[in-house]
Image (tube, rainbow, N blue to C red; front, side):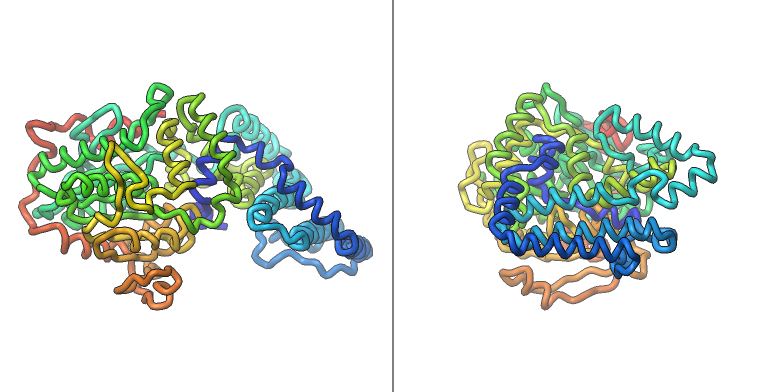
Length: 560
């Protein structure tokens, strides 16, 4: 699996937020769902016995060399020819595959309800992944060969790395070599300056790179998980850089990495921060309106802010909305209520409340264990068995640069995901104002990734049915963050778009047309039509009232 494909792996936001606060070990212990699975099998003794008898017969075939069980051609764990050519290794793989297949058949035989099915499959899949013979030192042919070639130094290096990884959170294999990255130099390197610093955020204004700029500025609200520079990766792979090069006056919030002192920061705190950012952008540029953008959880906060402004009669301050990989309506999340339950949610909120925050390292750990094959055992083999360093990859570097989430914000997001109150006008109240998304009567550009599992594109699409203005929905390739990193120049780049937004995402998909190129270009054209006339670019950043404080990417981005 490539670094890009690994970066596409993800899991629903509610499962991450609750799972991170309740701990990883809990997910590997038998629970009420596994009890119901065992009970269901016990009630079907004949079918269960038939499955086990069939497995025993397959073991007999394996022993005498008559088994036809083979790995899937795309299963990279057993790509080495030694797995097939060595009789002992071949039998080991066949035994493993036959056992895993039977375990999954026994799950299907139990006829569990969807919630129990998801939980049991998660439990069994993790056990099966862990038991793979490819994870065992020296049994893995590549590991044995490396031990011969290096005189065992690969295992010595790998053992040392394992000890270091287990010594501190997140206790998972390192996924990226960070040594080649320097913030402000070759990552998060678009020129600009911080023009406002508060306890909650820094506001970055980016240096114009064109003689003229759009009159209406763009302000982007980044996720509250990890740092803002997912949208400002390496040069020529930066969404911010691309916007500036298209003549867009661009501002980005950089959130402070909070600690226990900030435990009470919640939706209201972050909405106030966005409002303060908007006011500052208006005063610096002289524009009475701003295009408001939001990414993932930042998109939820941006939408709540826009609805708040509509509720107090100030929606004219928002010229248009741009939302990327953002789920507002969580009713069709699929795993909500499966890996997450109200009881687990209350426990998760209590845990973060005691600590004052949700540790981003815990998020990274639970995220990895939700995709163990690609995000745990892949690196287990590379780092510990082969003694190699993981590759350098900017998206995975960003992913490893974790932040904390305040207990107040964590609780609000968990409740929002489970209760879905934001989709019912007036049920969610922020700063004393009932939130009604239908009052956001401005145009919206909504982009999602077709392989995204944190914010499934079908769930992102539902926003087109919630806002009161005209929405343009664009479906990019790749997964969560990789969908955002889509610079021009790749001849294979495509995106899907349609002129109308029918009620169901499946209906939209049927009529959407595949367009060659990147959605970045499409978004730039859409923005230009809604950003007023072109005016002379400012010669200096900030203003007399808001002078530049420090060069981009600022100071908060360095907080650990």
